Structure formats: structure tokens, C-alpha cells
Image 1 (cartoon, helix red, strand yellow):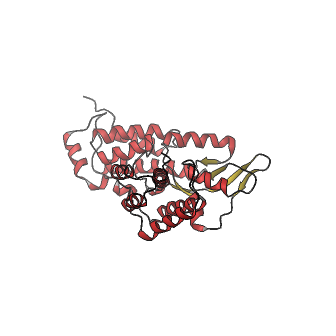
Image 2: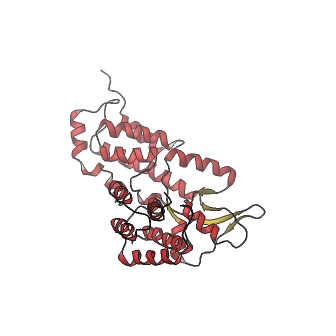
Image 3: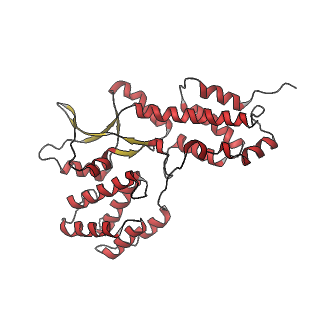
Length: 299
């Protein structure tokens, strides 16, 4: 009986060619990982296909852009920050979109010449408040080479992985793998995702923080501070926020905190980038904004 074509060799061929669609390559890799019951690789592939909604991102998905204001007459105007920590908080960000979304954004850049990634509500509010007269909408602009780099890393990772599978004698017969191949795949550390992408990062336990957030009472600093402690925020930083709350005006809606509170949020988000506050950067601003909105009685 004629032996069927090896799916691993097919994957190698796709991964070694100039990729037109990385999403298709990932789907083929997901098929292999699923057949071999390699749950770690399945998880990574699914995150790349669907976007990193909750999981911490790998380091290659950290991006840095430039904040600019959209002027209807003069185009994009760079924003000058007086504080390097605040600048980092605005310019550094996590790229959580799916590979398909990134491919679409990259294709669209041929028309615009640049890529933009969204700022959260608090960041937009802060930047609008810093403008004297004109209220120009801010955007975060990045070089499209960063997105190309992500696509190349994903493609190269799959190629290296498929070569490791072949090296371990795991090739498959058509879409099937023998019990022996599955056993070798399960026991071989060389084909684990950790050997390709390194440490994936850390993220605060969402169920714990959500439950504690529900206990924040209007005007109750004690409950707010307890929640901030659960996020591993240092006592001196909590005291700094308490002082900012007392000095700022009481906001009327959850998107317009006072200047000093907004400044504090920006500094805390910047700490996620430098690693001094071990929380996922993309979610940090939202956690803090929600907590403060509950404290002010706005939600």
C-alpha cells in the first residue's frame, strides 16, 4: 500500500515558502498539534489565530509607536511628552490582535503608508485635556515593519517546530500519527513551545481581581486600597493615588478623571512595560479605571 504524504513535511514546505497567508499556515500547524495532543502548541496557535484575549503575550508582540494628533490641515503632528514614564505608557503597547487582523492592517497600510493602533479611553481623555485650544484626536502610529516582524517570527517558529518533529522521527502518514509518534511527541521536551518562544509572561488572576473589584464602595478608600493591593501595587503608589484623589475634582463620568489621577494611571501603565508592575499592559489601564469609577460611584 502506498504511503500517504507526511503532513509534517507539507507543513515544512508551506513554512519555508514566502507566505501569502500566515493564518492558513497556522491552521495547518493546529491540525498537527491537535493530532499529536501537544496542548502547549495548540494554545499558542489558537492565540495567534484568534488573538490574545486574556493570556499574557509573548515578547515579540510588544510594540512601540509614536503618539500624534490628527490635524485636518497639517496631517499628523507629533506629541512631545515632558515625562519619559508617561511617554513609555502611551508609546509602548501590547499587540493582541489575531494574525488575520494584522495581515489585514498591513494590507491596508499600502493605502495609508502607516499603521495606527488604538489608545484606551483614559489615554485619549488625558491627551485631549493637555491641549490648550484645539481638541485634536490622538492616534498611535507604528512602523509596519513591526507587524512584518511578527508574521515572520510566527512563520519561522512553525518551520523550526516542524523540523524538530522530523528530527524526532515524527512525520505522520497522511493526517494520522502512530501511537509511537504520539508518545514520542508527548515526552520530548525539544518540541515544547517554551523552547521556541521563551517565557510567555504573567497576568493577574482575573477572577480574583473581578470579585474584589465588586467590593469597592463609593467613596470608600479602604476597599479601593484593598483592591489595589490585590493587583500587587506598592503601598507608596497607593498613597500617591490617595493624595491625587483628594487634590483632584470629582469626575462626572468614568472617562474623565482628574488630571492627577490620570497622570497616576499613566505612570502605573508604564510600569507594566518596564516590568516593575507585573500585570499585562493592555489590561492595566482598564483595571484601574474600573476600580476608580466604582470608587467615584460612576458605575
